[in-house]
Structure formats: structure tokens, C-alpha cells
Length: 382
Image (cartoon, rainbow, N blue to C red; front, side, top):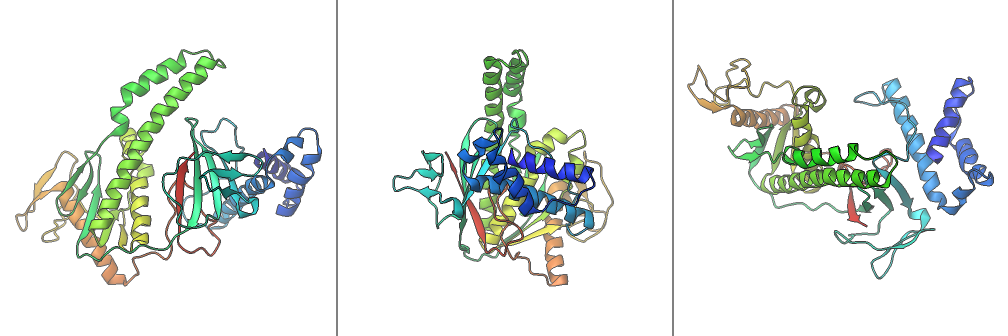
């Protein structure tokens, strides 16, 4: 509500040709003054920190939008802030240290103006948390995500390095010849999801039975997402532990998601997997390298370097006309990814290890403009 009120005030000021409403003025109007009105008097029943954090999210969204317009923000263009809906799949509130949240001796999470919550801890917190975000997902589950300061945990050095070619038939093909089968979690659950979707479509809108059917469908979807995330975690951890350096190709996932392979591309979840590789490599002292998407990894012989031109997808094995080497298309691509990564590091002398650890996707994190040390989120289901 605070987010939407602040966004509405700024949009109305812009439409009327008035100056941009400052952060301080906005806080005064949508929080301090709004609490005194009958329509918004209930704002006094919740922690003020939550309200301030909602405005902070709005201000960050505007800063990102303005930076994108001026060219100060790299990547795709950022759209202006949009109104939030109470029907959004994901609802979250954030408590900082100012809110004085507490973990009790009995292992409960004490939140201001809410009380003590029972928590099923997925892990113990390594240090004092700086904030906690309480998240409600589409299936009605609640999670508590803590931001804690965590020291790096370097692994023993090893001599092995690996290039990874991501695909659909096999999820990952490694430069040492190993092929990781694609689990296809969404494809395997399609029949169950279709039944749940049909059951939802038959229910009367606004009825309790429709809400029950919606929850059954949402739970079926989150089971697929949880299984995919667990697979990515296990595989990325194993690759980081086994190899000193990991190289992957920077795939154009958005472009592939607009083709007839869209469902399979989303089912594979390459972006989530690569993000896990990146932050785990930084935390454990491994090298992580991205190869440009325009490197012709499948068109070049990994033995002699001859560029044999593009090949249709049905060609899975081919013979180099110069050296006579017989290549598996995917293994050859993985070897070329590893070679391109080694050449790139040698040529530019760049430091492969990034200066800060990227946050895990979908969890709470620190503000990007703060001078942060290495951070990691510890999530716990409530």
C-alpha cells in the first residue's frame, strides 16, 4: 500500500508538471500524514521499518529507471516502477536491525508487532544477521531469508579445469567427455499440472473451491521449481569442488525463449545454474569464466583449430577434413569453451575471480550501492 501510494503521488506530480517529489517529502506524506487519516490509520499497527523499506524499494526502482535512461546502468533497459498487486505470486516484508528483530533462545523468530514465529531451520546462522526478509510464495509457504556476513571458504587447489556446454538433450556436456542428463522436471510433471489446471478452470470464480484448486496447482508448480533448484545446487557444488576453473558460454536465453524451444529452455533453467556456479566459485576461490556467445564453439575442430562452418542440429558427429579427428558435436563444443577461456585469460591478463560474491537468486541481499564485503544469504523455511 505504501509503495503504491508513493508511486501514485509521483505519477500525479509528473502529470501536473510539478517537480519530482523528494524521498523525504514522500515519506512524510505516505507514512507520517497518512497514519492520521481514517483510511490509512491501520499503518500504525505495523512496524515503521517495513513501511520505510517499501519506500526504499520504490526509490531504488526510480534510481534504476533514471540510470537506465541516462546510460549509467548497463544491460537491458529498465521499465518505470509499476503498481503492486495483493494478488502477486510473491509477497515479502523486510526487517532491518532498526526493527530490533530477534532470534530467541528457543529458536523462534521474534518480529516487532507480530510476535514469535516457529521456524524450521535449514541451517544455523554463522553470524549476526543484518536483516531478515519474510517471504510468502504462490503456494502459501512462508520463508525467512537472513542477510549475514560470511568469510570465504577456499577449497584445496586442484589442477583440473573444465569447460561446460549447456544443452537440452543433455543438460551439461563437460570438456572431459562426461554428459549430464537433462532431468526435464517440467516435462515429467506436465500431466499432473494439466489435470490441476483443468480442475482450476472448472471452479467458480471467487469460490473457496477455486482457491483450494489454485493452491493445489501452485504447489505442483513449486515442487517442480524446488526439484530443479536442488538439481542445480548439487551439480554446481560438485563442479566447483572438482575443478579449479570453470568456463561456460554466455547463452542468449531470452532469445532462445522466443523460439519453439521456449518451454524446454525454461525447464532447463540455465541462468539459475550459471548464477550458482558464479557465486560458489567466488566464495570458494575458484575461477569462473564466461565465454562470448559469438565464439563458434561447435564449428571449430578442437584438435587442429580448423573452422568447418555451421552445421545443422541433426549432425551430432562430424569428421575434421584437415586432421581427420572424429568429434562428438557437444563434447567438441565443451573443449572449445575451455580453450577459449584459457586464451581469454592469457591474452588480457584479467583477474578471473570477481571482487564481490553475487547474491543467490531470489533471496534477500544488500543494497548494490553500499560498500559491501562478501555476503551470503541463509534462507530458512518458516
